[in-house]
Amino acid sequence: MKKLLCLLGLFLSSNSIAQADDWSQVEEKAQGQTVYFHAWGGSQEINNYIQWAAKQIKQQHGVVLKHVKVTDIAETTPRLIAEKAAGKATGGSVDMVWINGENFKSMKDNQLLHGPFVEQLPNWQYVDKSLPVTMDFSEPTNGLEAPWGLGQLVFIHDEKTLNNPPQTFKEMLSYAKAFPNRLSYPRPPEFHGTSFLKALVLELTNRDAALYQPVNDENFAVVTAPLWDYLDEFHKVAWRNGQQFPAGTAETIQLLDDGQLDLAITFNPNAVYSSQVSGKLAETTKAYAMETGALSNIHFLAIPWNAAGREGAMVAINFLLSPEAQSRKGDLNIWGDPSVLSSKYLVGTAKNTQQFKSVDEPHPSWQSALEKEWLKRYGN
Image (cartoon, rainbow, N blue to C red; front, top):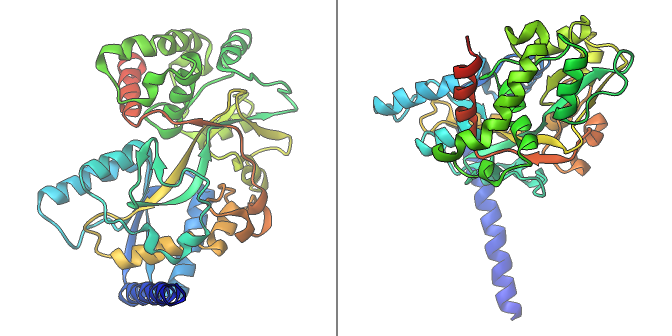
């Protein structure tokens, strides 16, 4: 028995050394590579953070990280599909993507992702495995994407002008009727606007089980009927009579600060703090979730199958999962994005970021179905 344990110990030890050797090879190949990182560019705080990370990655690892700003990562998928169709198996134009949900499922289904690679990352050991880091909107990640942060759909109000904000979407409609032209949401298919639709339909249907299965064309109309009835009423009394919608979360925050809206929307429960620090919001603003909870998900980083800078992307992702990078990302004065690491590895305000009761995302197929129907009804 003692001999068996000794052999097992030697095996595990040699396996760890082999993994370390493998990672050394990755780092060696990554030297001098340029990584084109396709990521949402709609937040100055996030853009500033990525600039900081790029500087650190260049200094520490000799990898150049270039932020390719997109309004929606769905814009990147057709490019990758075109490269696949053209047989471009190497030297691809995209090295790294910030994705989750429908975009992940689409890339996974079309075999556009490199991997599995996640458990090769040395910093994977610090990730809090109690979070749903291996599932993405009910879709198994299979090691094809690394968790980067935790998102929750919350609202921001100014306690000075609205001390008791609506706690349910039904209360939100009542408030909008009592105070017309004071509430709105971003225009779908913008991410926050579509998230608003999902949170709304989940509450109105009491989280109908059908929402956690692939969309069924036969019952789509029945399941979503309460959503469209609600929006028909809401738009009549919404900001600008529901004829115009904010472009995204940044505009809702600006409109809140300007006194045009009573609620802003964000997928980061700590965004209120970074907006206060940057002077975009008053100190009297506060984030809150609906009483049923906040629509929640993990957002991820992935590498296309044909990335020219594959090793550089792995090194960049590993850095972004480091306690150093996650602590800075979670800093309430910088980005305030809730970390995916166990809190014992974090320092500063990242250790104590605000989290609300979670509501699971619907099946990814509902995203495009809801967007398509919304545009059909209200897009003009």
